[in-house]
Image (cartoon, rainbow, N blue to C red; front, side, top):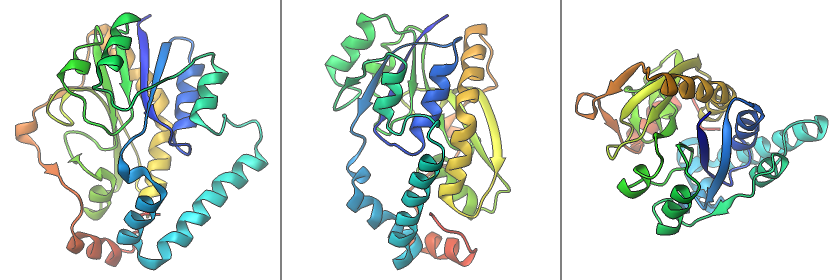
Length: 253
């Protein structure tokens, strides 16, 4: 059973249920976790600014509605997973490490010192060669698209804009090229009318997908290898793309 170390942020809507499910899986040996601050875009001010760029002035009200619905669901279902990612780790007896950056020497040293074989990455900061070479076997990343399609930024937005009927989720090994490497597991969920609802659906299948990817990695099996030279890399949405997105009746929240 390989030793797994988790990279994540303190995002407390999608991360807690996914990581709780991963930690409940007794066939996965999680030996530690690193919590990172994410990016400056994770601040509430920047989140509101971002969703307003997509949804207009209605965005703050939709954001408040999403938060209230999430809290109501937790109130009505007190036996759900812990609300905060820190509480998820505490529930499973894991004391997380806190780093400013996954490429920091202390993070690399920590991974090497405890003999981590596999890193599960679900935080947005770019990983450089030092940390990519630290785990014995691989650093696995979750990307919300059917790689090699929709490599890059805001993959769900771009998939919805292209009127895809399904949204993909892929677990792949990380390389210096972004969203490249070997794809070890992939699945699809039905496309919804909002980016938020699509992410909600993809996170609900991500724990089992990681387990499948881990099995394939240990068996030396993979679906295919991504050649970044043969696939388009998507950038941040333009104003014209956002306008068309709205015309299609789509929203971020």
